[in-house]
Image (tube, rainbow, N blue to C red; front, side, top):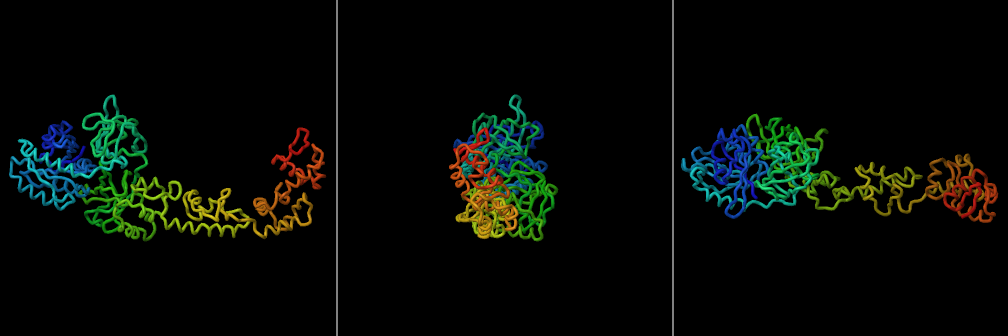
Length: 578
């Protein structure tokens, strides 16, 4: 299927032309048929000679219904511009053409209607000249009469050529179906309609709608039930999990996690000078129209604060309109959907300089240069293709910034060790803060030999206790028997407090039996050998005599031997070697 929008002044025969082409009534409301003018969006379709199906979004031509018109134009890739031979170019012809230009629509054709009432040549030449000055360029032109049918075969041929020239849709893109109608069908529930511009929609799909998820219960396209719809297509979607009052025009059905709901965006305006814009305008995106506050930044760039978040991506083409003057200011290219704060002095000028270098093309390298570190899910939601591998988990990094972090990390660890010589290494969390990283996984990914991670700390692979601590421990045991522990006051006199003793125990300089009870390394093995000479089982007193030590040492040492399964404590409080 291919989808085209009509465009043109009120009462120039757009609906009559669609009716003649399709045999269908595009005006849905009785009031539209009574008044003879389209008020809201109408839809009809036909099969061309090539077998291709073309669906028409028939938009209203009256100036009072421009928002409705823009809701229909937004998602459509091509247009059929209609001008009446007997009236020629009119104000709404110009506004519709300005809207097509603002949305960067590049495919279309001109249809001069009511050619049975006047010569089509003047209207055709005037319209072609104006159209040629827009992105549409030189378009084919066909003169027709919706009343007599004259020119309709030629129009069908031109429509065939037009749809054949349209670019192939992105079928692997995420779904963003802008809703232009929502209603309730008895026995089915909530139904929404829209133009699927990219991707594939299937029955059973879970889609994001606002803050929640809904499921596709069923679909119709061209009036028939379907299990899947490929872009570009008109589709009606029956939703499970959406109340009718919770959905309306301007909402969107989205592939979950693939769009960012942004209420602050930086843009480039293609049209009026940014400095002359009013502070409040209306932004049209898809079928949505939201008030925005405009903050000029550069000659053609600005920051827009939206009255409600919209699912936008870098590179989206939108339209900015001044409803008070009934004036289209121009097209908008979205440059950033997650812009930085501008609170610091000079931040706005600096930001304008950055925006002047952006073209709205999603660019991973550029985003990483500006953001330095960012999650892949956030990049994907912005519309940035992930063409590089992440540095850790879902984290992406600017290569230069990542290399600089890797160079800095050993220096941070070395500085920590100098300031904390008794610590077995720098805690990963402390290193994360020093490097300004948002995730511990990034620290882990940066650690390279000779650095290692042990027990949540980063240290050199060959790190050991400080020489000063080794000397103090040797002095503490100087002249003592194998199972004699230095007294607490002697340890304190040497400067061996709780931190120093804990560090000595961590590095294997001592065995710490209690806060101020330490033995030399190898005490466990030596105790096992000494106790092997004692008749089994043995009592605490017998063990104390065999080890030639005090109760202060013997009690915690035997408990340590129990815990290491060297000895076994019996019910009568005697022990035996295992």
